[in-house]
Length: 104
Picture 1 (tube, rainbow, N blue to C red):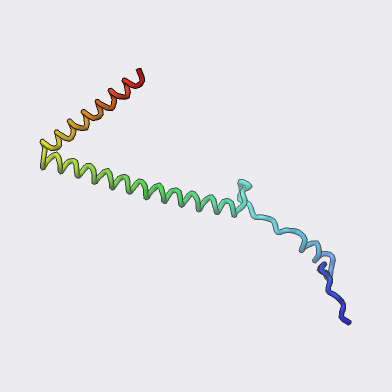
Picture 2 (cartoon, rainbow, N blue to C red):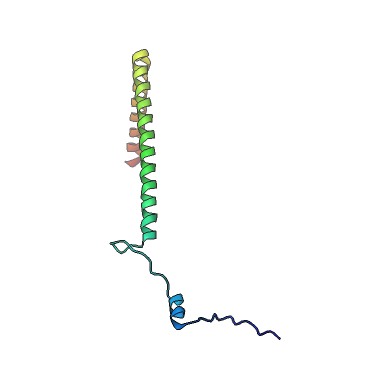
């Protein structure tokens, strides 16, 4: 009859047993941060910088478009432009007056 295999591994020498039980040391940078953490931080920083650059480009493009549209409106239809500014100022005044009257 065959003998049952043991669940505990057997080693040929004691040094091999000790070496297999020790975990491999984690490589660290000069600051004492593990390389895996440093790599993840670098990737997060790069992704954040890329996102900031994309947002900066979109805001710049949108503001340039808005300025171009305002200049076009002011040059092509100056009375409509002045009327729009007057209406915006009137609505801002009404909103400020309402806010001030609620706080009193």
